[in-house]
Length: 269
Image (cartoon, rainbow, N blue to C red; front, top):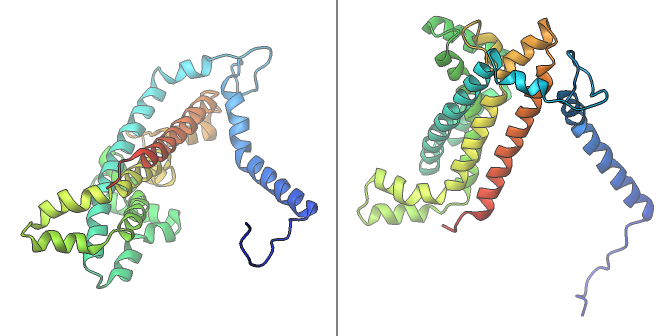
């Protein structure tokens, strides 16, 4: 028996048609770069072109030899380290402001500043710091810049997890005699593991795709994958760029799908 209330009027056919048209056009606009770059990566020419008469993996074979492989390994290593460090720092920061509400807004704003300030301005500041510390153009300096840019996204993931957590769990643990670190490890950490997974994946993806800060803080010694793509587009249109761009898209999608899978299948707290 239908519930009493205001009857819902059927959507006019014209409105439904306009909604679907807008949805399809938006999806095509977002997917157009992928729809272009993926076929280019299977071209059989020495230059960047769509497959002509057949598909080839020659551009992919180039990636596993020489400079491209070094850049892939550098980017992957940096992304893993930055993801882990940004998650650890985000966990400590979010725990602190969850327990102590004083100055919460100000502290959160400070941590989220790299998301608000134009990226070029942040990159210039990181370049100056790296130069003063003597870590310019090495993995430590580039990783430091990546960490500063990735940390806000990991913090947001942790804050969302803590927003659903009741402080009575922490108070009960401490009132029963548990110390601070045992409480963090055995009580808080298991209840915010969704935020930890989200923070790690966000930190990984932000470092994996970071190019602006890398251009400012690296030179000849550190050439990450996005920087090598940039150099290839600027100085020499290497057809391997299409192949490596496709691999970056696939890896990013795989990371995000893995996060969704783990979130859906994680055991209840």
